[in-house]
Amino acid sequence: MPDCLFCKIIAGEIPSARVYEDDQCIAFDDISPQAPTHILIVPRQHIESLDKADGMDRSSVGHLLLAAASIARDKGFAESGYRVVINTNEDGGQTVFHLHIHLLAGRPFVFPPG
Ligand code: AMP
Ligand code: ZN
Image (tube, rainbow, N blue to C red; front, side, top):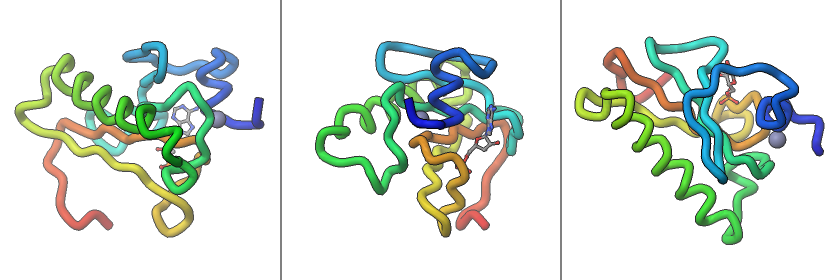
């Protein structure tokens, strides 16, 4: 296993507040929330970043997005709205190099983000 924070969370070696899981991904609360709801959706498979995803990962990446939409509906904020973010590499602000989607909700968001 790579020395990866999110792989350790998936393996249960580091605790997290899980809100959803299935055979392909897990979702848990971000430790430093930037909105009233801030959930990370992470593939069980270690993919470093969106930049490293390839054709083999097509269904896995699609699955993450659909999981985000499903969690938003289940938690009741789909209609009021939410934002999904994938920070990619240095300028994108990525700090954990295991692909993940940020799902943020519970306040209005401006665009473009900072
Ligand atoms: P990014 O900057 O897009 O790579 O996002 C990494 C996210 O992981 C940040 O929002 C962090 O707050 C979050 N994070 C870091 N460590 C943990 C942890 N142990 N549990 C939950 N979220 C974490
Ligand atoms: Zn990993």
